Image 1 (cartoon, rainbow, N blue to C red):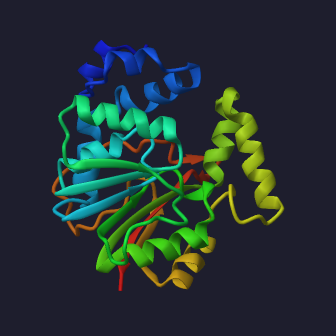
Image 2: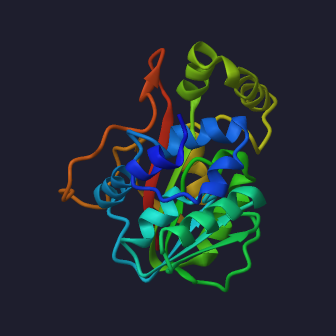
Length: 251
């Protein structure tokens, strides 16, 4: 159950009015992304394992309600969170303010055309939204915004995730079928992402991956300083990888 008390126990100080304003779909989302096992400590451990800290300025591209942004703000000097959904950006701002997070700022914008100057960021983090965008354009924009040597993290849903939704999540079957349909029609947005396709797009954008693997497995460290928490999603369904994640640098 999503309550102010349960969220606080997980490390999130949501304003009472924000909790009360959630509709049914948003409550399902918040329950999945903010309640155990996805506590604030969980996100901090994920960032520490990944090695996405100690940077001056980080972009959370597709920040949603701000859970990753707020965690990254504890590990980096400044975080800019950007999302197309005005409602989620508003909730993220209120959550950060209520938690006293002052180095995290949220804006509404399309990832394909962000208004920041060239080479604005030391790192770009993109979790759970890449496949819903015009992906080649987004990668070109990420390259423009990264400083030389800047780090990127991107993940995307692959075949196993949509098979999982069809098999196990009845209320999400229609979106899964839409993504599969778009992929069969060879569209460029709202499609299933494969490793082969992603490698080609990264190469075309001039971004150099150092790992393309399953969600939760990548790290910029040779020997991560913490143990990796359990992945956020089922690793495979019917033998197929659910979530692909890639990390690398702008060279």
